[in-house]
Each structure stands twice: as C-alpha cells, then as structure tokens.
Amino acid sequence: MSEATIGIIGGSGLYQMEAMTDVSEAKVATPYGPPSDSIILGTLESSRVAFLPRHGRGHRINPSEVPYRANIYALKTLGVERIISVNAVGSLREEMAPTHIVIPDQLIDRTKARPSTFFEKGIVAHLSFAEPFCPQLRQLVHKAALSAGATVHEGGTYVVMEGPQFSTRAESELYRSWKADIIGMTALPEAKLAREAEICYAVVAFVTDFDCWHPDHESVTTEMVINALLAGADTARATVQNAVKALSVQRTCSCGTALASSIVTAPSLVPEETLARLAPIAGRYVSRSGK
Image 1 (tube, one colour):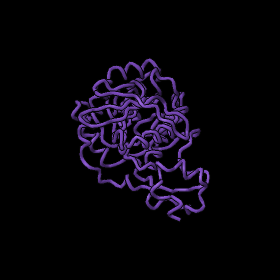
Image 2 (cartoon, helix red, strand yellow):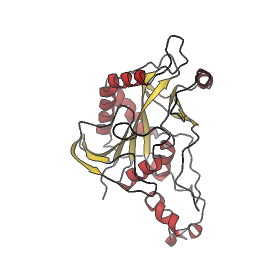
Image 3 (tube, one colour):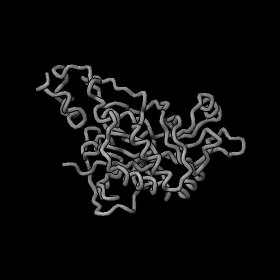
Image 4 (cartoon, one colour):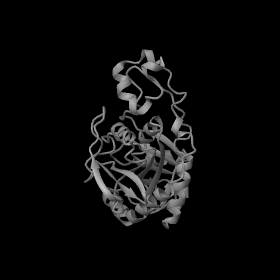
C-alpha cells in the first residue's frame, strides 16, 4: 500500500511544511544507506505527501554529500510517483532577479563526484533524458507559483555545479555564454535518478542572488543567500502547497514507463543481488521469471 504519491524535496531554507497534518516520521532503510533525514509523512491539501529535507534538518549535508540515490529510492518505496523539488539558485540573467522563481526545462551537468544511476554492477540501462523534467508536472508547478503571487519565469537552463564553493567569475561568464539561465548545486543527479525510478520530477528554483557576474552585485556570500531564502520561504511553501492541490489529476506523461525499453541487459545475466536491490525500481521489467 502506498504511503504517499507526492514527494517534496526541500532545499536550502525549506526544511518543513507547517501546513501538513496527520504527521508521522518514517526511517527508510535503502541499499544506498539512509536518506538525508527521516521522511515526514502527512496530509497536505487532501493528498498524502512525503517530505524530505535534502540537506537534513539543521542543514548538515553539503551538496556533494547528499545521498541522492538513497533519497529517491526511499521515496519510490513509499509509493511516490511525483516529486516537487525546491532549489536555491543563482541567476545568470538580469531579468531573473533575486526572489523570482524559475521553473527550468533544461539542465547542464557540471557535477563530477556523484553516483548518478541505479543501474550498475551487472545491469545497464540507457534512458532518454532529452527533456529532463516532466512536462505535465512543470506546467502544474508553474501555475502554482503564479497563484502564490511570485514573479515566475517559465523555462530556463539550469547549470548544476559540484560545489560547495560558489562559481569563479570566469565560470559564471562561461555559463552565460552558453545561454544558461540559473546555476545551483542540487538538481543533479536527482533528476536523472527520478527518471530511472519512473517518477515525475520538476524543480521550483528560487533565485537568491546574481551569482558573481553582475557588475552591480557583490560576490555571493552565504549570508546573502540565507537572507533571500528567509524573505521568500513563504512564497516557496505556497507554491508547493498550490501544486499539491492541483495534483489530483492523473499523470498522462511518459515518466511512468521510462524504463520500458531502456534496459539492455538480459535478466538471466543480472546477478541475484542486483535484482534484489533494484526490485522497487525495475522489478516489473527484470526478474528471473522474465528470462
């Protein structure tokens, strides 16, 4: 039985959803270790949701240390079909100012130290990732941000850097030359893993600063980011709450069958340990009965 069909991953500044009722905590064990924190299960806008603070309560986990595979695996085992991810980002565009919200539609991966697939150790899958975000969920989240009164930008390219340090000015200018729009540290490998788990995924990117390219903008500091997050936390929560309210509709996207033609390894060749580990992710596609 599903514990929750909607997952919320809270980023910097969003560590809880006060509007949730009938709340309980779940400690979920995974083959990839524990998730970032206990998962908060509850009801929000009449829907069962699972809330997970990406950096742990108290912000204890840096972007490179986030157990992304454990987080997505845990949400999958709880029955989650859609994830709304909240990310703090810097802007690479004058028109995307601090306190604005961006609903990105593309990603550039500049990470280098993060496992980004469940398919390893005897099994290979190649998934389509041309469109890294669920189009249906993106549309719902965009409308939710507008309803929350935010200044919203629909679409944009999100550069995901390794961190935890901020960009150099040369890097910032390079990304601008690539026509990227925002920069952050946490949408990947989250988006890739959600696709592999056949979970719809969309990002609410909250702009905290102009990175370091802007001539009238100081170098990014943690204090600057935190102050912006505190100023916009209520808008981010309202956006998530509005999105959950709209998610009573059935999903009609292709996210739920992303693995259907992506696994290239014959089930008979996959080690038993790997089959067991991947059962919640790909059990309906790979099993000994399917050889």
